[in-house]
Image 1 (cartoon, rainbow, N blue to C red):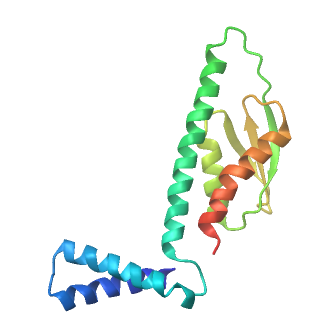
Image 2: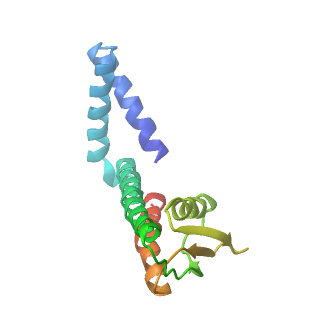
Length: 159
């Protein structure tokens, strides 16, 4: 991925020198031309284009915003109810993530979402222990996290 970014910058500078346009707009046009050349040459790279990873990061960000809004509304409704019938629990989530930064990001996303908190990580870093403020089914909670945050992090981090 870093090779593709460096190649794109190199092609942008080559474009600037070829057109004798040393302005930010000349660089931007060269960057887009370089990106087009890299897209045309993508079959020569053994890994996916760096732009797809950028889209995955943007997708993860908007997924987090959506989950943040949903869980904030759930916590708001719990707080304004006159009778709180909460079912708090701590459950275990076994993760497929292997890198330290992936596990840290998943833990942060879970903790930043209202109503959930990562209270511990196993020594082998395969299991997260999560406290949920109110939920009905452990399977639904685990599958929800796996289908949203974990899948999005895998799209960002895996080639």
